[in-house]
Structures are given as C-alpha cells and as structure tokens.
Length: 131
Length: 371
Image 1 (cartoon, one colour):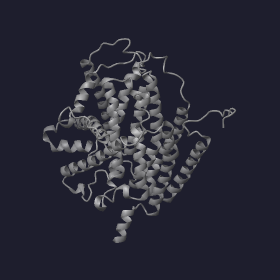
Image 2 (cartoon, chains in turn orange, red; image 1 turned 90 degrees about the horizontal axis):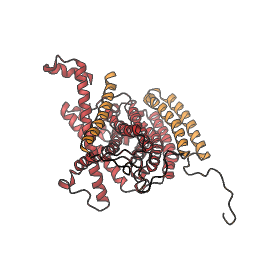
Image 3 (cartoon, chains in turn red, orange; image 1 turned 180 degrees about the vertical axis):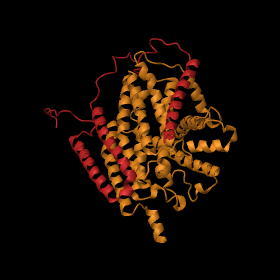
Image 4 (cartoon, chains in turn red, blue; image 1 turned 60 degrees about the vertical axis):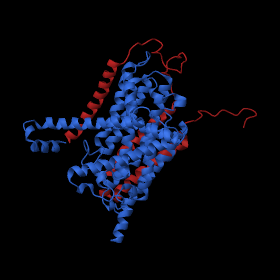
C-alpha cells in the first residue's frame, strides 16, 4: 500500500526535477539580452494598456459553483460504483433517488438560465420602431 | 513493486546484501524514468504526426526537411526551444509564472503511474486508479489558470479563465462516462478493469460491446475527453484567431515546451484510459496474452495496448483537423445541457442492465444461449 503511493511520489519528484533540469540546461545555452520593450506585455504590438488584473465576467464564478456541486456528486458515486454489483437492488434504488434529486437541481439551474453563457442581466424595454 | 524487488533480490545473488528498500526505490526511479522517456518521446513524435496528419488533411506536405520524411523535426524543434531566450514579462507575477509549467507538466506526467501498459506492466497499480487519474489531471487546470493569471496579459487571462471553465465543465461528463467500466469491474484499479474484459474471443469481452449503454458511453467519454484536453472542436481557450494562443502566449522557449508536452501527455492519457476502460486494454483479440510465457506475454500485450491507444490518438487528431471550432457559449451548452444529463441517464441505464442481467453483457448472454 505504502510503496504503491511512494511510486506516485517518485513520479512527481522526477517530473518536477525534469522541468528544473531542462530549465537549467536552457539557461546555460540561451542568449540573454532583455530590453524594456522585450519584457513588456504582448498586446499584438500595441503599447500595453493598463493592467490585465481586472474585474471578470461573473459567469465564470457561477460555472465554478455548479462544478463544485456536481464534482462532489461524481466523487460520491465512485465508491457506489465499486460496490454496486455486491449490493444489487438497494444500491440501484439509492443511486436512482440520488441522481433524480441531482437532475432536479440541474433542471432548476437550466430554468433559471444559469447554464446559458450569454445572458442579459436585465431586460431593457424595446425602443420605438424595434420589435 | 516491493514484491518484484523481493524476487529480484532473491534471484540475483550479486545484490543479496543490498537492503530491500534501496532496490525498491531504484526500481521505482527506473520505472519513472522509462515512462518519462516515453512521455517525452510521445510528445515529440506526436507533434510530428500531428503536423503530418494536418498536412495530409489540408492537402499539403507537412514537415519534410529534417531527416527522412521530416522524422527528425521534433529533435530540431526541441533544440530550438532549448536555445531560445526565456522571457519573463516585467509586469508578470514571477513566482506563479515560474511555478505554472511545473504544475502542468507534473500533473500530466503523474497520470502515467497507473496506466496499464500490459500484463503486469503498471508502474503502480493503485486501488483507486481511475479516481487517481481524474484527480491528478485536475492539477493541469490549476497550472493553466496560474499561467493565465501570472502572465498579466489580457489574452492569457482570458484564455486561462476559459480553459479552466471548459475543463471543469467537461470533467463531470468525463467522470460519469467512465463509471460504467468501474461498475462492471467492481474495482477502480485499471488492471482489474482491463482483466474484467477478457474472454469471449477477446473482442466481445470489451466493455464497448457489453451493452448498448456502454457502447454509447464510450462515445460520450471520447467527446468529453477531447474537450477536456482542449482539442480543436473545443479549443476556444487557445483559439489562435481571437486569443493569439491563450494562456501560454507570454511563455517562450523551454517553458512553453512544457505546456506543449503536457498537452500531448494528456492526449495519451485520455486515449489510454479509453483503451483500458472500453477497448479491452491490453487484451489481444482472439488470443490470451496472459497464457504466454511471462516476457512474451508482457511484450505482446504492451504492443497491443500501444496500438489501440495510438489509434485513438490518431482519431483525436483526425477530429481535430476536420471539425470547426465551437463558440464559447455553444461549448458550455454542449457540456451542461447535453453531456451532463446524458451521462447521468446513461449511468442509470448501465446499472439497471447490470441489475437485470446479473452483470452479464449481450455477448455473454448470446454465448450462454448457444451453450
């Protein structure tokens, strides 16, 4: 058991060491003459405008929240999948109820429009001449 | 690994005095080194094949200058990336900028630990195999988000956020679509999952043909996984024509190479997981590889596994150069409104089938009818 996970540790250490080693080798071989223009932020050749650490679309936050909920459910279903064939009908009924509740949540999100990426935040009354 | 080390110590008298843990550790490092070499070579040759396939599909030649048929192109590219000046933008968050490639590469490489390359050929057959792969490949998201944010570049930030939103959205269908294989095998270990698909001429034991739901679930998995690795119909995070290159736009030289290698590593992991869970893994069609003498069985099953996985990688490339890119709202709709409900219903279908037919698939039922 312990040696199995020790292998994972060895993989992680070796992977990180490879990155470090290659970066080191590259450092020895590459030319280095930085200039102010070279180190400036790339914006397709324009003079960079302000910082890019700005406020962001709230949709990403909503997606993250939905993801957390569903990922926990997936994590819960894995142990169920392992013992399913031993437990039989009981396991099926439980998972069925579980998934139906979950899909009801998804249906609610769908109805509320939280699954739509492009969404107008408030309805603007149509101007004259527009439909 | 420990059992193997013990048998090695008892078999070779020259190392009898060496402590067991030293031998075990050495073997772990050796297996890690072999897989690392494999991952790097796959990344290199994969980039060559990707460009050749792109060339063929777009009716041009592709790389053909370096070496015979341009086969050494990847070495030239590697040397070029190694010799390039490494630029860290002055406004970037230095620490996170440097850390990001480590996370992305390690997250992609660590998934190789549990892949069942052949009969008994797994670096470490963890009893939570499938789950481990899902968990460790999620590290890539953190790295991508970190790279996008640390660059302090608008393209990179947009690309990183989009990539994170996309990868987490498609992680749900990926996790659910692979579950039928776990249901059938009753284990999360990838070797157990592969072993559960033996027998019946070697083809009809595959989970792909187990029942209609597993057949469907393979395609659900492959679609969702294609999105999770940011392949083209779903490559909005890196969309060259609008985001230049996405989260890695500020990365140059060898640092960029690690994002690139991780992408190919992920491609292989996805293909290998699909092979192990649905296409019978290392099982040789019409033949029992386990019955062969140890070494030959290992080699034959390794070859079969690699052929299946590489075929899937080729299919991914084919899809990549055939379909146009989806828009970002279409992408999200695809995941949450189609794939997520479908995979949940599909999972219920598989479990109901297993319940009614006592875990037997269609080929097994037909075989029992014939007698």
